[in-house]
Length: 214
Length: 214
Image (cartoon, rainbow over all chains, first blue to last red; front, side, top):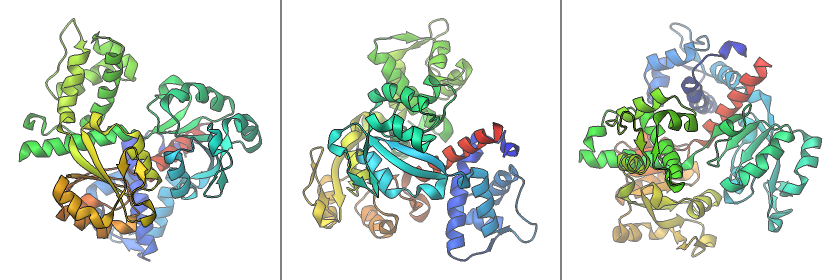
């Protein structure tokens, strides 16, 4: 996959959206689409689409457009969906529970293998086929099951205690719902942050900006 | 606020992060910071910071740096935090519950005034001081309380039924956790999407890209 190195992260961030739209087309048995049609569907311009996909070598054919299942698969390959990174969720509160129950991890390149919390009241509680484990069992579990990714759904103040334990267990990928800057604090980690607050404030800006135009 | 029009959305999206770091500095009683120090703290370059803030007119003083409380307040003004948009949550499942219980809406420009679901088992359930209301009560509640923003935590397939009702109630701002493209389907709405799946796939790409370098 080294050939994708150097593609800007903003292009990468658009790929899951392509993947999603192509999946929907595929599910509707649409096998072929022009960049113009795909653009209209996605609210983009055909030239943006061609530019994005050209970063990875193109995939379209002049006069034919895109082969939907092939492009879907190719984007899946670019994203590395087939890797199936072994993943644990840290924190089985409402957010951890929502993710455990609602996300189709395998379709996004991950295999969920365990859910942890430190609240004894949650010990053994069933969530979508997973029995919540206590943080005391983390090290034994990891040495046996070798997860490499953790979904961080715990309170901010607990991260500093938990992160070094996760790193020592061989976990270096983080899907981070806390506000702690894991990537900066723990060099060598690979982190994708979900800053819900930042999104909400961006909405506030957009709405305020609209008000100013009224 | 019209003077902020034309600032690119990627600059806007960085503002909540500045706001967050400045808040932390303010809480530590740090009153003054140079762009170089702020850059080191945030993992940016001083020139990036100056460039971002110059989009709104600057705020720094040569040889002094930034006044932390003033800059924090100014960025709050840019984001429109004081607007307090009246907001309801649609869907009181695990995600809706997590947001109701954990987010400090007023610090981000919103006032949460109600939580709705269509599951009779949730009727009247208490969540952080809110009693879950049934969707049947939506119209009456909205005509009395005039929310303008909805947080969409409901299943994708329910959006098409619910959205027109929300629009008819005067709601046109959406914090959208579903995969339905509300902005495209309902022109005139203001939408901020949280595509959790897209973030997870971006993490998959980053991890796969690392593997290829090993």
